[in-house]
Amino acid sequence: MSTESLQKQEKIEGPAYRIATSRLIIRCWKPDDAELLKLAADGSTSHLRPWMPWATIEPTPLENRIQYLRKCRGEFDLGIDFTYGVFDREESEVVGGTGLHTRQGTGIREIGYWIKEQSTRKGYATEVAAALTKVAFEIDEVTRVEIHCAVDNYKSAAVPKKLGYVHEGNFRNRIKDADGKYHDSMIWTMLKDEYVNSMTAKTEIEAYDVFGRRIL
Image (cartoon, rainbow, N blue to C red):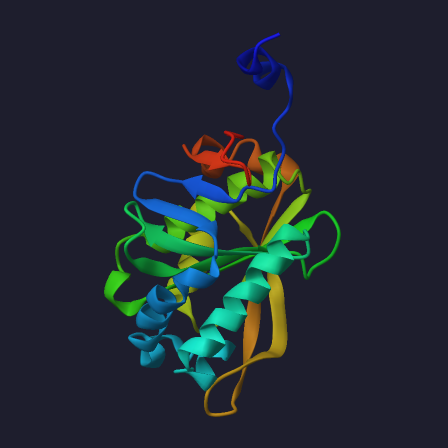
């Protein structure tokens, strides 16, 4: 039997290491992405600091970036957590970062995202969240996806709202900003049966496993 016939018969499973949308490449970080990541994050420190706890210690040295990306890659390979870089289609520029995080427990993914300041107001966060919602339900086969953001981060909250997520409630004093002030956090959710009829189910993406084999 030919290799092609074998590939047609076997089911290619996740996780998705690489996802292509109409304008972006979303893929597992590699240590040699450190310089591009530093360039994107360092140029957006003031933009991200009010909303992203990790931005309160920015900028950080390049070596710290390398170690962080090694950790991301290791956790990805071991199935512990799934942190992605967001790139332009040529992968010459980091547009932001995202993830399908496992911290909410078995059968759940939490989507986080940030977009560098120069790339905001282009709909990239919505494009990323839609793609990862599809991956979570169709490849990871979870039953629930969550998106969390500060209650006063209206631009971030607009993303799950647009995609059909439900505002399930708020957590009090959950997010700490650069000045040490705590903010309430919104929780937006989508369930598996809601996903089927949502706009995210119609999102067109290509997803590939660690060997570059097409999943979706």
